[in-house]
Length: 245
Image 1 (cartoon, helix red, strand yellow):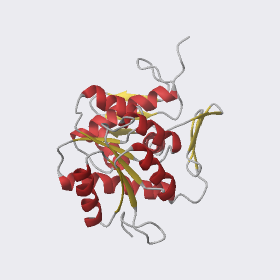
Image 2 (cartoon, one colour):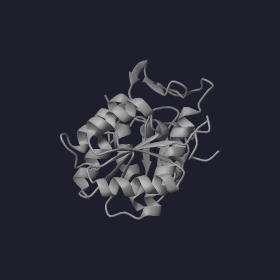
Image 3 (cartoon, rainbow, N blue to C red):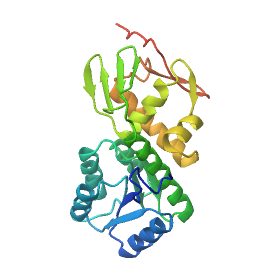
């Protein structure tokens, strides 16, 4: 079974939201050619109706929407689901927009104009990750000091307190916890968490790591959990560092 079908043998639905009808038609064509099912909308309300009705595996969202912009739709999609991978596809290429979108829970950020094959590859990689998330059956717990990660319920607790993670933040932490006390390179993180490794993906890794650290309560200068190994990658220690008093 590939990423184009779910466990029931049905084609995987991809929510596509853009106010440019010609672009929506193009994206729908690309999705269909790849064996995916496009669920298309040109404005946020219709997009949310499709989201609730069809339970898509991935959302592709433009930022220039009306009556509310793509950031508002992104926030609402993330509020409704911590798991669904969200790819922002936009003509807005500024660093501020990219960081803001990723900080709000986007999993990837692609600037128009885009290469068709590259975009489809990114969407399929996100769909594979969504499929893996939905396939977790047996309750599995990963622990590292005060961190307790529940792979079935997709939940994190720190010292018994619940912490809400996006799907990508969860997979990032899971990968680090599965490699406790080992240095994990940025390349490995990009390939195993996002499914591809290129300069844009490494930018996404950087922002997502920053966001995860913030949710873990890590101090940038003296982190408890996620430590940077300069020039190599990251390490999650099985025994967290003590905070300076």
